[in-house]
Image (cartoon, rainbow, N blue to C red; front, side):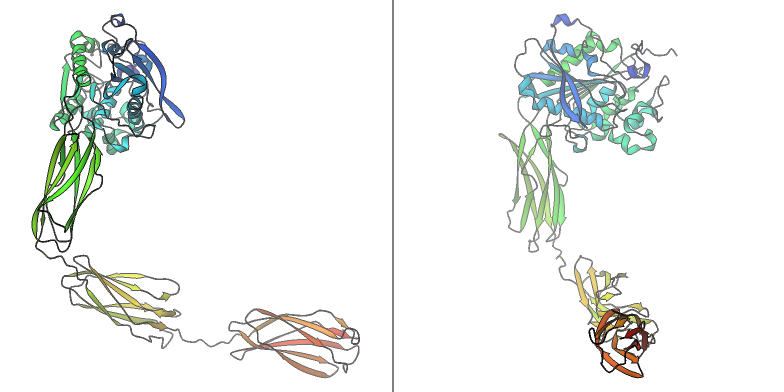
Length: 631
């Protein structure tokens, strides 16, 4: 088999060109319509302080608000530039009364998906926000792209309203939806590119080095979620704009099956879509700019961007059409507004019940939504709701146009169980205490009762147990059962104001609880055999003159595990002893005592002060001071 034509491979680099970095060369001279007005390098957004730019081409003599064609270049998402559109067939649409915007987007070497689609959506929002300044029609914006650009325009078409692909690059109050898509040989499902490749394929799409893998940042087979998030087929819904897909039957870069798969998905959803295969054409080529091909594209654009809509039209849909709930139950419904092609506006929603009743309340999360938007409807019944069937009618209105969706709500005759189970905690009782130093086992006994099955009990210790709390989930029990749980308290644990709480949940979700009487656990007393410690007996001087300075200050520190109840000071000198009792001290207390020296004590005698301490258990400890001299 002869290698198929990749007619544009000369001189620029294989991979960049096979993914269509530029646009198809013009088949007609620009002179036919005159040179367009060109405004280059307009900043339409900014990401990480890097500007995003577009070039805007306008007719020489614009008439009225102009429909817009946005051209998105290819290049395997790795290369390409907006400037390559300068002499393209796309820019020539200015001679036919269109404004043309050629945009740049972040390439995969700089940022991974979804950066590329975020930038494209930012460009659409900018065009709408600045439509008045440049004479554009904000309700008539179409997109056109080839290869990687075809992928991005298809994604613009299918992901309208997908918040996670919007990005943050400005004008977020504007819509990024488009009204027409021209997709030339763009990927539609990254995950199936390898399996659809023709025998002449020049790319291993599943390789980590393929343009698609580089786009999402991983080899496609290893990250199916990322491949799906970057694929236009993932987001197809019935409210997509019209599509024109064109693909060469001998495309050795992007398999023709990619356009077929996207087309099939669009048609299954009821979207206006057309698929044209160009026999023998490769990844681009002159077949795309023949008079027949060009007329096909221009007719498509005119039909959807120039022909005014005769009226705004839309439909309402709900994700629940019939539901039975118990009295007191709630039904959640999603209401979607689906516009027809070219329709824009805001839908005013209202809800009514037949027959009318005050025991059912219908609450719309948003009473007004833009066409294409969704909102939640919560239908809440009260316990006293009579058993009956109700027609819930949701009405949407845009101007004078009204559309209706209905939900049938049946309130069952089964009474809702609102009675909580009863729980009695029978033990432990007041006064649980240690009788020895062994481990203590407490039996927690309780009884539960309910009109339906009790599905779980949660046993909680509500007191303080060594500074911590714990919860114990125990086995399920039937109505009217008595159960027991044993808890082991280890030696040394102490509990103040202990209490067990038992909570029971029945099959209807009702909760009951019961609590035991309060109790305490005291560990046995251990004998105190430790002596108090007395240290640091010091005197403020070592020589004392009785007549001029007859006092001495004595300081010391005592320490004990239960508190010192008494300290005694003893002085011995010249054969005379005396004892002075001082106040009690707490553990680790520092005390001092000032003693007035008796005149009867002999001069030049050496004295020693001794401090002894007695604790509550009768243990005694002592310490002495350094010697001192009386003069």
